[in-house]
Amino acid sequence: MARRYNPAMARWLAHLVVITLFVAGIAAACTRVHPDWNWSGIWDYRQKFVQGWVTTVGISLAALVFAMLVGLVVAVMLRSRMALVEAVGRVYVEAIRGTPLLVQLLIGFYVVASAVGLENRYVVGVLVLALFAGAYMAEIFRGGLDAIPAAQLDSARAIGLTPAQAFRLVVLPQAVRIVLPSIAGQLVSLIKDSSLLSVIAISEFTLAAQEVNAFTFSTLESYLPLAAGYLLLTLPLATLSRWLERRFRYEAA
Amino acid sequence: MRLVIHALARRFAGRDGRPATTVLDGLELTTGDIAALVLVGPSGGGKSTLLRVLAGLDVPEAGSVAFDGATLPRDAAGLRAYRRTVGTVFQAFNLFPHLTALENLLLPLVHVHGLDRTAALERVRGPLDRFGLTAHAHKRPAELSGGQKQRIAILRALVVRPRRLFLDEPTSALDPEMTGEVLEMIAELRVAGTQFVLVTHEMAFARRVADEIAFVADGRILAHGATATFFDDQADPRVRRFLETSQHHA
Image (cartoon, rainbow over all chains, first blue to last red):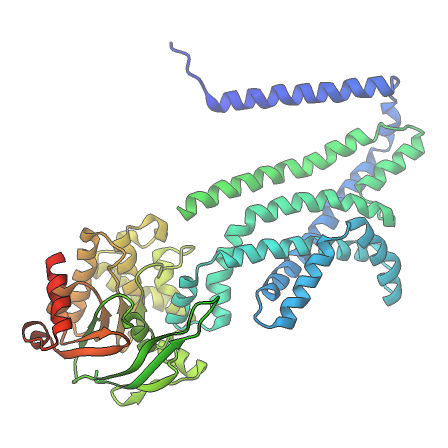
């Protein structure tokens, strides 16, 4: 029987080799800086990891929902013909994208939230994260809305749709298909960015890992499960994003 | 329909350094009580803009348009109400790509004309069948041929039972074979008594379906008349030259 080159199999093998080498490299680095690992101390605090991980998932999901709402509204503002509305959108997007999330968190929590008397740090954390991601989402949505050809709006008007109906029934569903892969990608960033919420003492995944390190007098042990925990969330999303991208390409043909 | 157009003017403001252009320049036209009016003429002469004004998609700066004595409104709400009583088909990109052919047909029925889904489905079944499109009803536009897309687009304009159709070069983006199937559909509608205004470059077809023909160039009507007279007894030398050239290419 002739042996045939199987591209799917080749890709799996290539991935496996690269992952093995990568893990081996990390393991070598670990043993070099820190020869005696104390995993049992970490294992005792596994519940804390799980709680932190769940908090990270919850915060990320809540922030995602708000970020998409903010992004959509701001995208419409960026496209507005009213100069003032467009300016508000533009200033927001550039201010957010031009400053580090860490700075926004510190100002949002210690200045803005204190000033308005908002005490729940989880609410503040979700809001800041959502406003941060929303600025990026706005640009993604704007690109999606811009991609709808003018002819589609003409057709929508021709059949008698109101401008609001045209947006809801014709423009939005098409724009969502276009932006979905980028949104899934943005969610990956959002999950990773949520690790910064540890600076305002939100017990999410990263803070949990830091605390476990402190409790067990270990130095590095909890960072490896930390990385694995994030990958567990982000890898499926990255795959989903690539899949959506492929699917949209076929559909648009 | 009896169409009366008086002193119609449409200008487009200059943008990005380009000069302003006058597309319709005091256009006058009065037809008899006819079913099918065909607009012909050179590209850039204003026929598509004229059709957009007639379809209520574009508002002229000056002048008036009246179908059967009813003057076209100029305000947004009035124009939208008017557009709901007519059907318009463009050269291409009529269908919404995220919806199947069937959903494209149902959308105006359900969201503009207030039918419930069952009634809308009932409404489109016969027409789909009559034009041999039932087998394609569940396909997305991307899976349809150019001719099928245009026939669905015409059907979408028809199923809302409009007073008349406006067809803007419905076959210009199609290859000859598909052009044939779309023109055949329009010819069938003509026989069934559907009223329409058609912009086309297909002279033989214009001759076949039109009651009257108007030649649009430089934003005005250069010649207009009953179909036979227009083609066989054309007084205007420029129109005559245009017709001769078109026939050579046909």
